[in-house]
Image 1 (cartoon, helix red, strand yellow):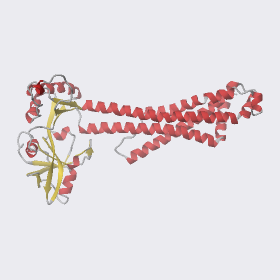
Image 2 (cartoon, one colour):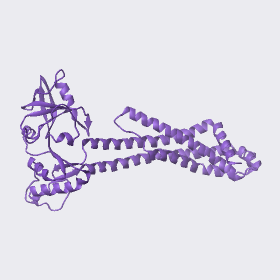
Image 3 (cartoon, helix red, strand yellow):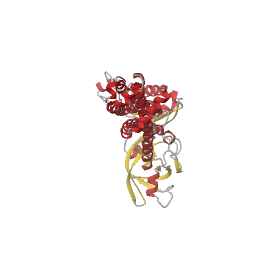
Image 4 (cartoon, one colour):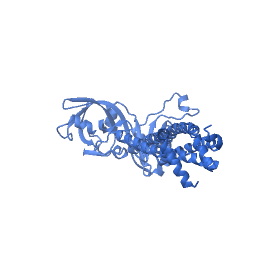
Length: 402
């Protein structure tokens, strides 16, 4: 029997046992679809996090007060001293580093915003004009905060897009007076709608000059210092330079934590990549279960087709051809299951993207190939035992149906 005859006979056999074949194809396709959809979800989550971090800023270094690392002896603590706060002077001391493009001291708090008979609590960012390019925010109307040198003392406020719409629905907010806490501010600009980034809705914030924020919240310390370097290669040298400068300013105490944008992104990337591989492995278990189903169904098939096998052997078909015939049937079923599962997985991923447009749930190429490939190999391995059993049948006993 030629290869073409084997393939032709096997596909006719698969078509003749429709219910059995459909059940096997369904089991294989569900396993492949699970691999494709779950990896699309995992890879989409990773892409979403990367996108969110990129929107926060690139070449970014974040300086926090306090030290996150565990160390040995702490002379400051032994002397009863507490770590120093970050101050505006600390931030200004960094301006001399040539690799720094811009920096923005930052204070965050909550205050009551009131104007035109309306009132609500809002998140307040105190910073300088540099916060706009560092955080990749755009201005929709007016102007942003004045530069530090010049009109720093002007009580300006920039409103988020939603706040501007809520407080001034019928008129332009530019030039209007608002009250924030117990102070009055002049609206100088409105941010362009940006939505939620890293769980922080920029449409519902207000931005005021850093010195006004410190006065409003009665503090002289900073919440963060955001530093943008001129290039990505400057991140590590600038990080060490900042550590040295602030250590000198804090009497030799290393009481700050410095986080680079790349380090945070790499950590999330590793976690989410491991998560994607984990869910893909769990989904692949369903393919193993489908392989066991294929083996069981084909073993039953061998017992049902004993007479057919005996007839083929009586006509002169060697055991190797019987073996190839059953393997070919398994390959057809696995191939059909893999293709159907691939299509089902792509459809499921499309539904996820339609339901959550912000999630780039595209299945990675390796998952598509691995899903179909594993289904194909599983079907082949599962058919080895039934094919061997059929090949070993005695033709005389098989013809009698025993």
